[in-house]
Length: 371
Image (cartoon, rainbow, N blue to C red; front, side):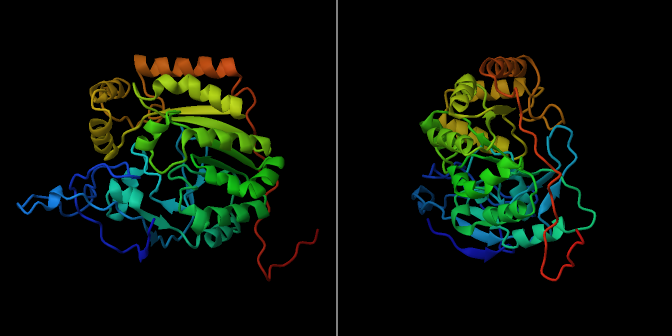
């Protein structure tokens, strides 16, 4: 894999030409940002250029000059109020990712740009120290992975997430992580001691146990069987670990819900959650393109069930409805989940995190405390 570092002021690729399925990429198109002043359309001028097989697009690393690192929310259906996203965009390339539309705010496409133009925050650890030192800072667990995966492939080299965890470990600040990457095992030297102090909890996201389907849906994420190994290793290291069956895709992955929960439980997961497929903004078109190319015989049935659980629409953004849906199909999924978790004993005892240990980061020159 080749990549290059550029400034975030670069212009968008600006093409909505349909692309062939390419190894390691899920999106089939790269439509202009919905905020773009102009629209581009690829036309065949007779020279046959559109018939040529394009080279797989390389990943580009770009710099995000963030002024703050902790994002806050007051959404009533989200179980945390603080989160950190070390990266914008995600090389895992999950075609269903609800975070894809955020690339439009950068003037880029939620399609191929989202999985090939990744913005990293080199000053993340420094910014975190400054925010944790603020006089009015109030402690609550910080969530990683709420938007894009903190352990996407580039993290192996860039170590932005690692630097953030080192700050939180040093000041004994609680955190939660959601990931679908085995790279998290690298940081067990930080997470295991934190878990002993009730400062860390991890959820591993598993969409399907079918390796072939996973390769098409989430091409650069860790394979499902390997994620189960990660659950086992986290559990053996003493880190409270759960499984997120997310997203549940109607008629495509929903038959696997019980199998995923059981496999994760056998691997050591003691908590669980699920999210019904969400298709906000451009994600709907990207997902429908993916269905047409990868599961054409199921496409109409999948989208019919999606709309049946979203009030006749492809997406329902209302609080309290967006994660679970509504209607007969959504209720069936909820009931199956409840029966499976009860049978397996999942969520009987959920790990609580300790906010009382936190001490603001110390900086050279600070006055020492009296006691």
